[in-house]
Length: 253
Length: 261
Image 1: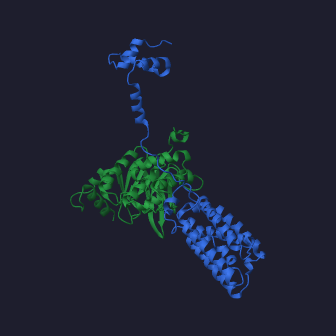
Image 2 (image 1 turned 90 degrees about the vertical axis):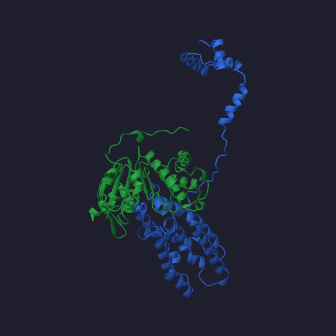
Image 3 (image 1 turned 135 degrees about the vertical axis):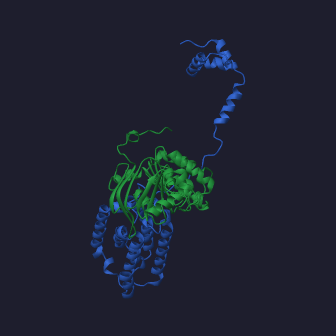
């Protein structure tokens, strides 16, 4: 490889405009690849540090990068108030269980319908302000609704377990009904809208089970171990219906 | 970091029209709001004009694939929306609803980022794409402010940013200029023009002037049908001094609507 002549480098360093374009081109290409000739150029240039400092000052970012909060993609943010309400109700039921001694445990009676509000908020037109925007996206549909439902259950189930501790309520009795009501809300929500489905199911449960068993002061049949297979069947059938009708959840309800 | 261009992005298109409908019928509640609509739209900016209740919003919702048509044919990018292809198709669509709700505690950046996640964009591309979309919607200085602190026009621009964040091939904007001041309207129109080259932009509006200045193609709707499709100049030419209106385009609008009744 031919290296640059000292004279040419000195002219280049002075900023000589008389250097022919082809020579200039060849010189700069050579400088890019040859450390020795760059050194020669550096020896012939004045004020190099100043120039370099100027370049660095210009390429340095002058603003702080924006602060970044990691977004939770699991929670529907609009479900948070509903979750808070559910937790409050659970606490209230625990307190009543501990002091009122009304026969069947309130925690157990309310546990099956505890998650439906949060589940409804995860996919309801009226409860999610960004509903239309979200339902137009590829991720919308059953997958997103299930994801948000799981995030609700992950909060509600431990709260119910804790709430049941003072009254010795076994989670085995309410876990399947609880899942059945969550799946049922999603299934009915596909036809009626999540809000209506949740409200309807909660009302039916309150009127047909919670009320009568408080009046009669006895644990209802549906919450006794005999009924567990029934709830299991409801969960499975619900899951199958969800899978079949998955497409409907990707549209405006 | 350089982005890898996928084979799908450079593949030649195998369809004639970005949006093609034949005898499309879509219900809004119990009413048949779009009733026997034939439409062929190519790349460019298309303005959908029409009186209130003409079926503009219902049509846009059907094009955004959030409403399922009850009859007729709808083909977007050569594909029929539904079933397994729906997700892939929706990745190519940007949509700004007429009244769009949002989570008030989100910042503009978080809102657009969340929408980018919902649009299944690759994780590595999201921050850059979000910043570009915010820049194009002219919200750079407010990017980290919460949505509840923004004015109506700024919220609408945040909506525009989320619509363009995935570089859609079909961009559907329902009344996007509501709440924008004149300078922002002008900027919005230049944004539209910059997109017109490779995107099929559909803008619904009831402002005739929006269409006359920003759109290359005008579709006039009435009672769920297309009553006119042509350039703004053709729209203006349809009217004369005897028709009500303050501008040639408005006179053309009232002339055609009068005829279609």
